[in-house]
Structures are given as C-alpha cells and as structure tokens.
Length: 367
Image (tube, rainbow, N blue to C red):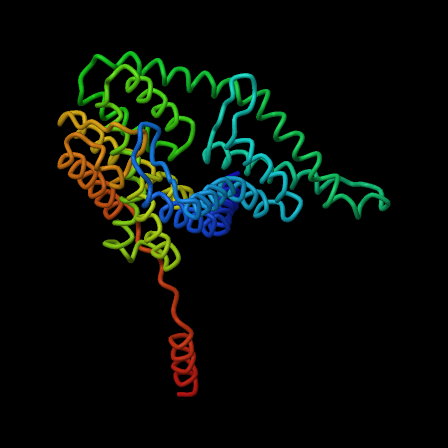
C-alpha cells in the first residue's frame, strides 16, 4: 500500500513538472506581449486601455498566449500519465476549467485544470487497459479513448464539480461583503490572501468583482489593497529566483525574469508555473506576502481608481508611496519565506565534470 501511494505520488509529481515545462513558453510569450502592449496603455475607469492599433494586436497575441496556458497545463499533465490518448481530453477539460460552464457560469482556473488533468490522465490510462477486438484496436488511441475520456471528465465536471464550486464562490462573496464595514487591517489581509490563492482564477475574480462593486459606490480602498496584492505573487517569485538562486533550476530562474515583468503590470498568473511545481511551499508564501501587502494598503488608506494593478497604474493611485511600499514589503515577505522553506535544487554535474570523474575512476581502478 505504501509503495503504491509512493508510486502515485511520484507519478503526479512528474505529471505536474511535465505540465509546467510545456506551459512555460505560453506563459512567457503571453506575458511579454501583454507587458509590451499594456506598458503603453492609458489608465481609465475600465482599466488599462491600449489605443495604438499595432499594440492592440500585440495585446491580442498576449491574451491568446494566456488563454492557451491553462489548457496546455491540463493537457500535458494528462499526457504524462496516459500518453497521447490523454493529451486532447486534458486540454479540452483545461479549457472548460478556465471558462464559464454550467448554469452558474463557474470557472475554476488553474486549480481546476490541475484536477481535471489528473482525472483525464487516469481515465485514459484505465481505458487503455480494456481488452478490445483487433478490428478497433488501431483506432483506440486516436478515437475511442479520447472520446470516452473527454465525455466522462467534462460531463462529470459540469454536473458534479461545477455547482459545489459555485457555492464556494458565492460563500466568498458573502464573506467579503460582510467584512466591508469591519477592521481595515483584517479586510486588507483577507483581500490580499484571496487575491493570491488561485492567481487569476475564480477566487481572484470574486475579489475583483467585490472591489468593483465597492468602486461603484465610491469606495476605493479595497481596490487599492487588491491591486497591490495582484502584483506580489509574480514579483515575489521573481525576487526569490534572484536572491535564492540555488533553490531554482536554470529554467525557473529564466522564468523569474518574465514573472517580474508580469508583476509590474499586475498579471498574477506569472506565479502559476512555480506554484504548480511546488504548491505546498509557494502557495502559502504568496498568500502571506499578498495578505501583508493588502493589509498595509488598507491601513494606509491607499486607493486605486482603476480596475488594474501593478506599478504600471501608480499614476491612478491615491497614496502612491504606500502603494509602492506595500507592494515591495509583500514581495520581500514572499521571497523571504521561500528562502527559508524551499530546499536547494540538486545540481547536476556538467559533461566536463562527468568526464573528469570517469577519468579519475579509471585511474583509481588501474592503480
């Protein structure tokens, strides 16, 4: 039993790593194009507006990269578990997770995509074991397995998971609404933590809806806390990859640069690849950092007058110094937590070192 659980754990760890490795280019490409477009945008009541036609096209390309990110993650998680028959069912399920489905229009973002990627993978892996006549064996991997897997996974998600998740989102809205007149610090902490918990997913969007509703009533403080918090996860990861280099692979350190750019323009999703690979350490760190930033923002009466975040909108902020300081402190807190909780990455010897070691072993043997 213990060996079986260990085997499944290793299989899931490999699946998450595979999903992240294939998702990374989509995150980087989408983030860079969005950064280039939004950096020239104009702050308005509806967010950053890009007016230049060429930059609008860059913004469209960046948005496409981000739209592909979650389906790719789920698809390659399933692919790692079941091979090619799991790829398309995983991608379709990931697309559903990232878009409104069901009567309540529920979205579950990257957390839902991870779950559906695993489900798709194991269903496809099971169907692959079925004994079938030779006449249909050749079409199993390209037709039968993908159809069955997609149907079971997606219908199960729509009819079983969607409604409970809708209830969760409604509960969060009610919780936030009940705290509107409460302690500024507590409200800021909650807004910050909920902003980071799923990095652009449904809980994050629930916080956004809550702050937009308050903005319509002329209350801009909670939006200030939220817009501080959206930038902290990617900025915290970027800082962590810079100051704790031994704790990240070369690929992750490169990704940290693009995460930093995304943080500056308020794109929380830049932290997703890090969270998928090391959920138990990264998620608490970014939630605490964002909670600290949000709490400071609320205590210092920081107000943001547009529905966008990051340093790119600082011109539309009342309390600019504390907006910057709250974001900086939250970023440092996230990086500090990761510095003390993440283990060092095992360094693989270079080819030159391997050759030198082999030569030394041969000399020792000859002696």
